[in-house]
Amino acid sequence: MSPLTSISPYLQPNGLIQFLPQTSQTKSTIPAAEIPTAPEIKPASPAGAASFSDALSNAVSEINSKQVAASNAVNGLLSGQDVSLHQAMIAMQEANVSFQLMVEVRNRLLESYQELMRMQV
Amino acid sequence: MIDFLPGVQSTTAALTAERIRMDVISQNIANANTTQGPDGQPYQRQEVVFESVLNQQIGDPSNVQPQPVQVARIQSDNRPPQMVYSPGHPNADKNGMVAMPNINIHEEMADMITSSRAFEANLAVLKNAQAMALQTLSIGRRA
Image (cartoon, rainbow over all chains, first blue to last red):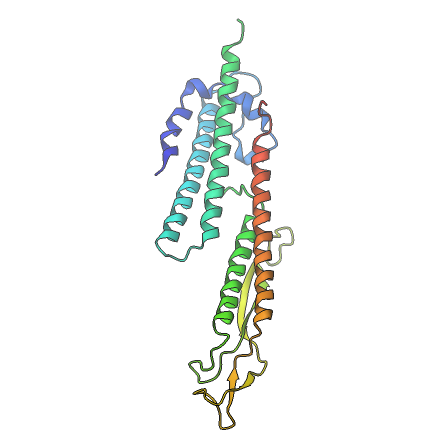
């Protein structure tokens, strides 16, 4: 029922998280409360990396809760509870958009990782 | 809770309200020929009254929330019943007149069109909200 929880362990390894400060700087328009304080250019400190992975896993669990809410709405609709058709559809739509957001974040992370891997030393 | 789709709260409330309006209209059409209700009177036309929900924080003008719509009440139309001459009808009075409900089927059809168009308009808002969200997610994506 919750495919996203199986993804979250893969988003947390330190090997990946260490490259994250660059991507989090590009998102600086998001309110400061949602983003952990990222170091400027110097390598990520262990504390900074941990808090970013926390933020990431929080986001993943939030998106998972959207999916769960959508499936609850559909179940409620099909089992004759007080859920109307448009409520179920809107819940599914929100789950869809949040899932797209997660996929985009994952693509961006992977892109920056590959960019670094291609770098000439 | 993250809010991905702009205006989704107002739109959901509006869709729910329009559904209730459609329920009432279909009840009116279904009872267009009901000469005797539970109270012994002919069916009276019902209509919904919408109101906006006041969910603004009192005394804090900076915290302005959207005001979704909701059904305030369902009230009955007080126009008199239509009298139809039908002496054989079991509900006819001593002059042979039967009190039919005060429902004009054309009026109900026009109301149904209004309700259906309002529902469509809210669905269009939702569609655009989703398009906005997905287009925003495509920022910086390589072509």
